[in-house]
Image 1 (cartoon, helix red, strand yellow):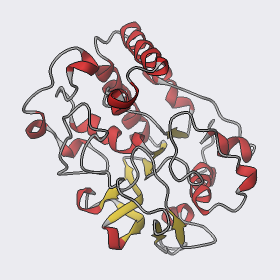
Image 2 (tube, rainbow, N blue to C red; image 1 turned 30 degrees about the vertical axis):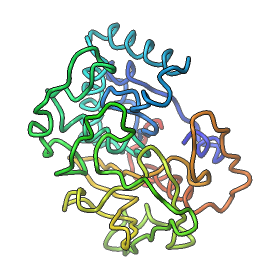
Image 3 (cartoon, one colour; image 1 turned 45 degrees about the vertical axis):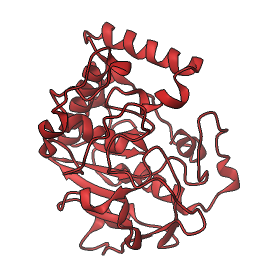
Image 4 (cartoon, rainbow, N blue to C red; image 1 turned 30 degrees about the horizontal axis):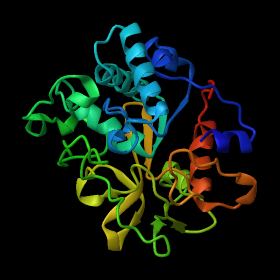
Length: 289
């Protein structure tokens, strides 16, 4: 996301959990969430990366941050953060999430008061009845999914349709909306093509069966029964979820170099991101981005 903002010469500020918890979101119109895990499971990277210095350093920083904010667990801090963001959206903010910040945001809300983290993540056992205690009404976008409780499996739930993909056939189609009758989705789907090349992420695509019926689908791969780009409203605000990590890096791995957007000036996938960046500019009230 910062690549897009920098490339488009749009000024931005970076906020994280501390800023959110100290009520600084009220200063902004627009908030982007990207490669974040709001469940407190550190991306479920344990099996592949737990021995890496960056993983250990990140876990230590998150635990220190949680303690400094008065929480005994990272998962408790993340839950408080998603609730603050929900207040931001309900009060008129716009939230745009990609990759794992989409489903983990909803999972954290649904699991409010339920321990879904294995001991390797938070030091104590997960609730064996966690699945039955989920409250899907709390989430923005998803319902009736199943948690993946195995801490060594690189998935949070069965929402994500991200495995066994063929890059040569991975595309999704944008819906067409009337600018007169549906101005918001019309702005969010503006592009020079209706067919977008797919791209993977920790969360790549959402199985349609688990998307709530009141959610507006902006882009989908109908043969695969998956949606990639969805939108909804809450109170006075809006939210959009976009599956995948980097539209011009099909499989983005930890440590891969950043994409050079100068090489992709007409990227349809990045155009959708830019639509979400520019969307608040169409609203009358101006605050910082």
